[in-house]
Length: 105
Image (tube, rainbow, N blue to C red; front, side, top):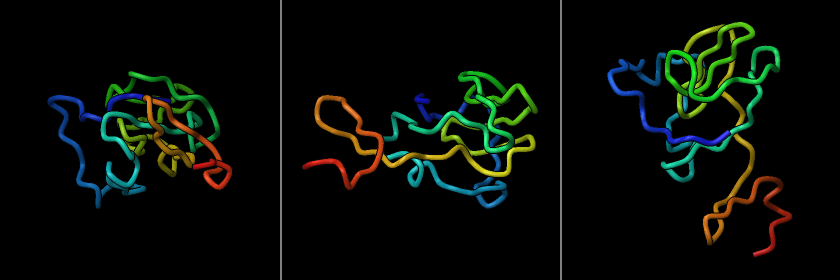
């Protein structure tokens, strides 16, 4: 998954402390222009759709979980945010995703 993490205009977002799985944008995104996450719903493993749902971010149509642009669960039965894999931004707009110990400098 990858998208801009800017909040949806006109949407009154809950304070982070009120979220089921609170996490700041900064803790979930190394580059504020992009979200890199694993596209598997944390409820029952379905595949969320991009640019859908209440937040025009990620929506799981199987059981109705709504995630925001940082992959945080905002509504529905999912217990946790979308998982963030280990990754690192590289020169030339490249991103390495995987075991960072295997990344040569």
